[in-house]
Image 1 (tube, rainbow, N blue to C red):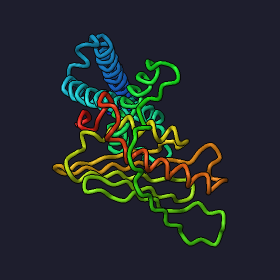
Image 2: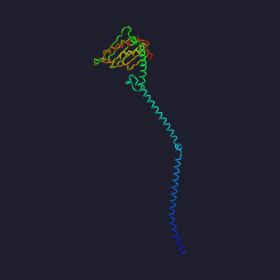
Image 3: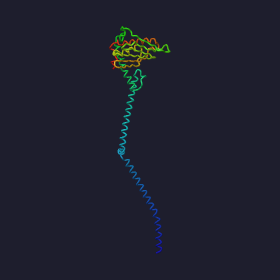
Length: 279
C-alpha cells in the first residue's frame, strides 16, 4: 500500500511541471492568431477604401468645391476688370499723344477729355478753313482785308528789360464800344485776346482767327473761348516761329498788323465758321 501511494505523489509534481510550458505555448498561439486577424481586418479596410469610387470619395467636399467655384468667378471678374481698365488707359494715352500740346496736358482721363473737347472744334474749324482756301482761285486771298476805311489806332507798350533785344511788349487796339483786341508777348509765346461786349459775336470768326495766326507765323498752342450772355471772350496762346524771336522789331511790326487784321474780322466773309456754330 505504501509504495503505491508514493508513486501517486511523485506523479503529481511531474504532471504540474509539464503543463506550464503547454499553457504558455497556447497563449502565444492565441496572441499570434489575434494579430493575424487584426492584420486581415486592416488589409480589408484599406482594400475597401481603395475600391471606393472617386466620385464618392469627393462627395464630402462638394460644398467646399462649390465655395471655391464662387471664389474663382470673383477672381475672373477682377481679372477682366483689370484688363478693361488697362485697355482704357492705353486708349486715353493714345488720345493724349494726338494732342498738339501733349507735353502740357496731365495724363489723367479728365484732363485728356477736357483738352480733346476743346481741340476738336478747333481742328474742325481749321479743316474747314483749309478746304475753303483750297477751293479759292489762285492768287485770291482767303478773305478781303484790303477794304477801305480808317486804320484803327494801335498802342504798343514796351516792357522794361535788361536786354535790348527783348521782344516782350503789349499791343492793344484802341477799344471800340463793341470789341477790343489785345496782344501780349512774353518770351517765345504770344497771347491774343479778343473781347466782344455788344452782342456782335456772330461776326467773330474762328477760322479767320486761325488763318491770321498762321499767316503771321504763329503756331497755335491752345485756344479757349467763353460766353456770358451777349459777351464773348476768346483767348489763344501761340508760339513764335520762323525765327521771328531773333528780330524783335520785325516781330512787333507783324503783331501790330495782326492786331489790325483781327480788329477788322467783322468785315470778313459771312461764310466763315463763327463761334455761334460751336455752341
